[in-house]
Length: 504
Ligand code: C2E
Ligand code: MG
Ligand code: MG
Image (cartoon, protein in one colour):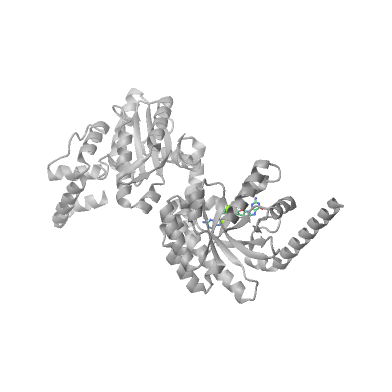
């Protein structure tokens, strides 16, 4: 819009405007037929594409070039008009905001052209569910908004369910098949807002709530949600500043070998020391950092700090340990991870075999891409671990093809392995599987001596958990190191004595 206004006001830029017009017409030609169809349905203002230059300029200012749908500006105008009408007639109105999940990953992995095709296909599917008087708009990025004319709660609910099932079907993008998720937020006139701005803002708050509930669902706006959403927005603002202000710290949790009883590894776990709220756990801010892309600089900071720390411990004559660093899906797929790891290792002087990257099963969804990145990382000499194993539905066939050094059994299985025979079987099976594939097995979340005995009995290689130590700040980790190894020794002695007693 700003660009268009500038063009209008500056006579000298007429030739640039003409060039943009030509480019626009060319770009739109391919989508003209589909767009025409949706435009007729969504608004009566443009039955066809204007031929005159000035009208075309107005058109560009009001419609989204990619999908041919009304843009945010036009949608606001139409919604305001509809609200005016509803004030007179008392007819209900609903505003439905849709955000696509996984769109960014698709854009980044198979390319922007495919991302564009996907948005066009989404627009076409959504257009197909509209009734007379409804308006569909693309708000930019991966967000769409719908004005549902004359619809009450029950009808809006049906429509949301219909959209969810329509968008759950795979999208054929030339040779690729892609799946997306969608989060929907719904607000109603007049109870949730009396202006276009309020209705969209509150539908947005409801959509964020749906997203946090795990996407592929819809939520109606409720007032308390808004307060929570504002809290999330504030956290996003704070998160942007946190890195510059040095508010992140790493804590380190020891990983103990069940063969030697020694600490052979350590996992770096991030904490946010917020100036007002104190320590914030990663499960609270990592999802937000992923969503906003901030995970890329934060992840790089973690990698650099952890490698620097491990090298400093080695230089101080501490026993050699492998440093495990968590790598989020977005970090793995988006940034030049291999380049960053290489640079950090060179900069810190840490030998690659003392760095282990922990990824989760969901990170490896694009199997061929994952295989290629993992092989490049292996070429650098670093180790690869699969975190929270057992929760991500990995295919065993793929597991065999990934160059993996370690499987970390998810703590949910360890927690119940003592009481629940199914979990005990899962743990034993994962240990066997990993050993067949020549991988090391780590059990996370070891909280009791019973867990430890069970894992030792079934030949698990390594344990990590509160029984031995919480994640600790670097200095405390050093202070407690010898104590942790002594604790393991004492536990083993107790275990052996009770075995002797039970045999006698
Ligand atoms: P994770 O990588 O699976 O880390 C293990 C989590 O389990 C840690 O939680 C740890 O404190 C906790 N834990 C360890 N032993 C026990 C135990 O015996 N019992 C129980 N109940 N919990 C135990 P934390 O530090 O809150 O981290 C949570 C998750 O946040 C991590 O799960 C990881 O997925 C993510 N995360 C942490 N640091 C980073 C980071 O630097 N980058 C990225 N991308 N993710 C991180
Ligand atoms: Mg981990
Ligand atoms: Mg884990």
